Length: 261
Ligand code: NAP
Image (cartoon, rainbow, N blue to C red; front, side, top):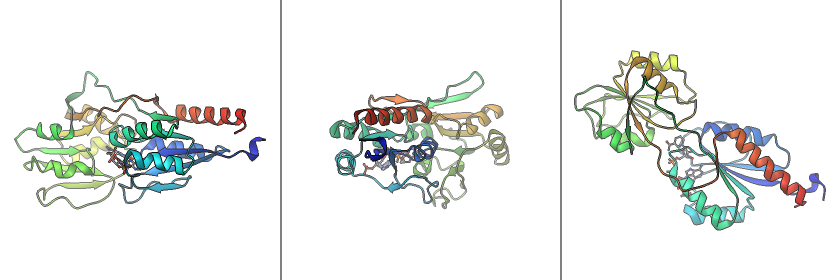
């Protein structure tokens, strides 16, 4: 069988990050690879994708394993956010069950420098609980799901950056919601923090370049950052960049071509 008559290598790309967007663009150019990008559907308007997109949960481990088998998926790349632990753990279990090779892109966490004022926390709830009692203005980059949790400390004025616009909750009438999608620039975040007189920052240790600006801006202004550590994810095969993931996909494609499958 020659390469042109072979069935394409079916790739399921679990996305929702800048890495998945980059990887989708690259695999769209790879002949012989048929990729589907899977999104949870949390944001109203997803970034444009050059490959077909499916939206919504699979229905747990069994649902994902069923999807893999039903759709003849050959390989899975988990390019979800480091804090999306549930889907990542589901992917490990489902790929084991369906005997489908899995690779995860795991960007390294940000490292504290000598000039950073970081207070590390195990969970988002712990980070919010650790805010001081005296009222101040707090920048939250914890995401939309954390907005209700901020009500635990209603004395603060929150400036909340999220992808989709929304109204602040009734318990936080003074909160400002800034709707924006990264990448962000350090100089812009310094200006934003100055404009709103931000006193401290709430952030997840997401890693990567696109959202690092708030960390660099806090350092420049010597603001404390309440930073949430990564959740645990079971052991899996990982790389740190979408380029390395692309090589892994190319390797699977080449070995399949060699076998003439
Ligand atoms: P999560 O807690 O790990 O996942 C919750 C459930 O949402 C999963 O069990 C799965 O439902 C569904 N799901 C998650 N990602 C999916 C995907 N890519 N395709 C299909 N279904 C998916 O995830 P999360 O923290 O809510 O994050 C949701 C999405 O937003 C992720 O795709 C992630 O990449 C992106 N994101 C998350 C963060 C963050 O801070 N958590 C930040 C930026 C982007 P079923 O069990 O029904 O399959």
